[in-house]
Length: 235
Image (cartoon, rainbow, N blue to C red; front, top):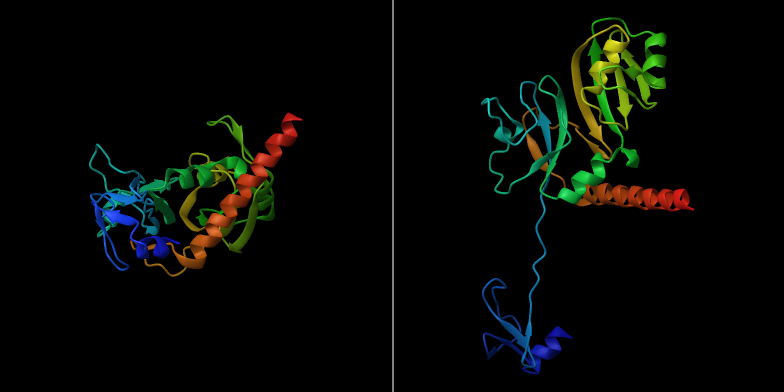
């Protein structure tokens, strides 16, 4: 239809008829069809990155104390992006970053139940009692909150894997302390369908293709479920 209008001479740029293949700048040129002005809406370009955060970096856009931040690792990125969630200074692994605020809100919303997976080592042997306590939920006195049930699996004598759907402040470290032990290393390896994989420490890459489409599909599904639950609650 657009080509038919152009061929009929009804489309003009800056008052001049155009032909197929002509180029125009939507920021400066004025377009009209049959004498009526047309507003060109440019779709905003969003950036989605995954970063393998090393220990020693803080998850913030800037730091008044001059400490190293994750932004220092984004060499060559010409758009302003922000971290989705946090990894504390002594933790490492997968961190998502974007300039789309709506995506941040959807992933961070606890009610959506999005999984985040971590590999952890502690200073004591991992026992069955420890796994049961971690999995069933623990009262964290400092936060005055009880953690939600989660999935925990032993991976070594002093190591385990844990999958959370919460994001409380220093949650895993506090949970371990409530069980009488301390975290030695903590690495996030997955957020929803995004896996850290073999991404080199300190490196980042863009999230695109099927990986990105699956992420958006999961977010859209959780949004629909949340809206359904809200309707049922209000009945």
